[in-house]
Structures are given as structure tokens and as C-alpha cells.
Amino acid sequence: MNEGLARARERLAAIGSSAPLRWVRRHKRALAIAVLVLVAVFIAVYVAVRPEIVGQVLAVGPAALGWLTGLYVLIVATHWAILLLTVRWCQARIGIREGLLLTVYSTVANFFGPLQSGPGVRAAYLKAKVGVRLRDFTLATLVYYLAFGAVNVSLLFARTLPWLAALGLATTVVLVAVVAWRSGAGRRIVTAAIAAVTAVQALLMAAVYFVELNAVSGPGADVLQSLVYSASANLSLFVSITPGAIGFREAFLGFAQSLHGVGLDAIIAAGIVDRAFYVLFLGALFVLSSLLNLRAMFSAPAGGDADAREGGAEGLGDARA
Image (cartoon, helix red, strand yellow):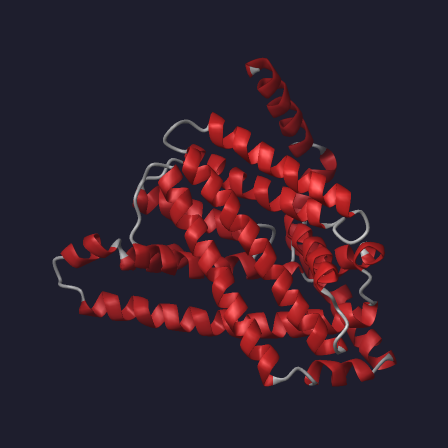
């Protein structure tokens, strides 16, 4: 088994050092800017040709906005729970409020940064302030990505090949059980809990897209469509180099149209609504969290004992820098 892992590492290292990937890494910022410009031009032209899409976006009512707010609060709560479980998996401890603040700041970084920037922020903070080993954090995060990827790949076929989706979900459960068992006696329950919360997170994302699709295109997007649509959008996060997976999400959704059956008009309109709302939501969440952080900093005793008990609110300020 060790020889197999060594060969796998060598292959991954060879892929990572290949000329195309080296070129992409060197020009990552330029590529991200190019994608953003191309997507902006595409959306501008598309809206100019089909101006009725603007009316669809503006037709989103207060009820839909209320649902989106509640659902995104729950999604942030799942990220918070996964962070706390990850730290516990790494056999370390983090304060409840400290974990919430780190979740908010890393979620903002994950939206505006390329690829999966959020885990990088969490890893750097937890290593420096909580003493979590990078190896342990990486393994625990891989559990999350394994569950996230497997659940969403399975849901891709919920509408066209339901038996394959069911088989995929059953395989995911077995795979998570094997990983949990191999994790050791002290980590089995935590591993299973990370996977369970990840599955809940995927369902909440599907609910978000259900609300958005029905808000921009009128009643018509059913539950299965929303599940497949959400799975397609979520998988784009693995390869995106643009903020909020702009361009990459739309490409994945376009390629998967035969699976989810949502038209291009609805994809564009729902994407505009989702990004606009999520940016405002993250902004409000960031401001509230920062105010909470500042209040804790100014109300703490000068000796710093309160900071140690609360888990280092000042440390979170350092992590954002």
C-alpha cells in the first residue's frame, strides 16, 4: 500500500510540474482577468440581445430574498460546524466565537480568491494560532472534499439516471464509512459527522438554486432540476480561478444542460441574482463580524487573559492581513 501511495505521489508531482500547469500558475492572474473580461462582455452582449432578462432579475421579490438570507445563514453555519469538526479531528481546540469569525473571514476569501482560497486561510490561521498540524488539517479537509465531490457527482444524474445517482450516493456512504474506520477510534465519529454536514450543505445549496430559479423564471424549476443544477454549479468550484467561479460555473451549467434541463436565460438571470445577493450578504456578514471582533478587542483587559480564554480575537485580525 505504501508503494502505491508513493507512486501516486510521484504521478501527482509529475502532473503538478508539467509544462501546461507551470504556465497556468505563472499566468494565473492574467488568465483570471481574461476570463472575467470575457464573461462580462458575454453577459453584456447577451443582455443587449435579450433585454427581457433584466426584468426577470428585477422581478425577484422580498419573499425570495428572505429565503435566500435564511438559507445562506444556514450554509455559513454548516461551514462553521465543519471547521469545528475539522479542528476536533486534528485533536485541537478552538473557541466557538473564534471559529465563527474564522469561518466568516475564510468564506469571504473563498469567494473572492482563486480556487479554494478559504481552506488556505483556515490552515494558516489554525497552524499559527491553534497549533493544528498542516498534515492533519489537510487530511481532514480531504474528507470534506471527498464527501462534497462524491455527493455532487452522484446528484448530477438524479434527473436522468436516478438509479445511478442512488448507486453513487450508496457508494459514497460506504466510502465514507471505510475512511472513518481507517481514521482511527478517536476520529471515526468526527469523520462521519464531517461527511453528514457536507451532505446537508449540498442540499442547502440546492434549495438556494431552487429559490433563485423559480424567482427569475417563474414557477417551473422542480426539486430534481435544482439538485442537478446545484451539483453542476458546485463542481465548478474545484477548477475556478475567478471570484465566485464567475464564468466557470456558467460553463459547467451550460455543459450540463442536458442533465438539469434549465435554459440559458434562467442560468444567466439566476447567476446575476446569486452573485449580487451573495456579495451583499458576505459584505454584511463581514461588517457584523468585524464589529464583533473590534468590540471584543476593546473590551478585553490589557493583560490579554480574556483573549486567551476567548480564543484570540486579535489573532483573527492578524489572519486577515
